[in-house]
Length: 229
Ligand code: URA
Image (cartoon, rainbow, N blue to C red; front, side, top):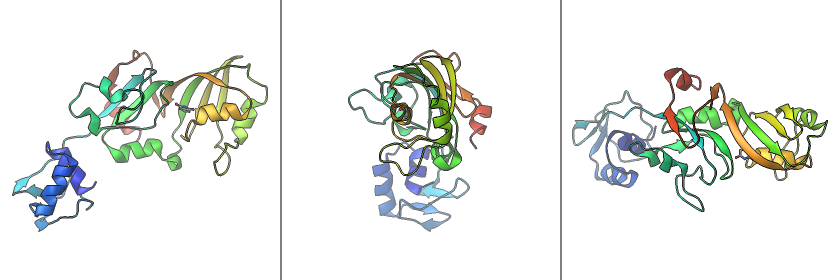
């Protein structure tokens, strides 16, 4: 991780304060003064400030059941950030691994471990996300086939990756996708002449929302964390 991030993870300093300290030449990595905040360091390195050895706090991994009218951003905009729902120290140092729209509910994973969230977000990793979708119009017979083949979304290069559609009833389906393009589910249904009226994420990889109440959160188990390592 970056040296300035490591300093934040092991002290109470902000990123700006960490950068100031670095500029002053008080930070040593393996006994060498380092001033560049973007220097990559590893937890096994000896990192000191004014001779005092730093130890990074361990990473946190959280699952939350997102309500509507909250946003997956670290700053409040039209709606408040859902990080307000997590009553842990330095909640705003964490980030959301795979955003949901303000009007979407369901499973959100939150962490301060960028390498872990990369395994969920990166299109290359093809991590499965399962959405329950409520539609305005009855499902057309060819929609599942078209989603398996991939559909063209406006402004995107190439087709969407093969997606799996399971019909629950005429206007309710489960959709599994392995990418996370902007408004992807809504745009996929728009491309086949339908409209998403309600959207809820039930699963990411092997992790299920299950019976976690709306607006509540819990730490992931070690097995759940390991699923994305
Ligand atoms: N696709 C969407 O259109 N919206 C979401 O919130 C998630 C996936």
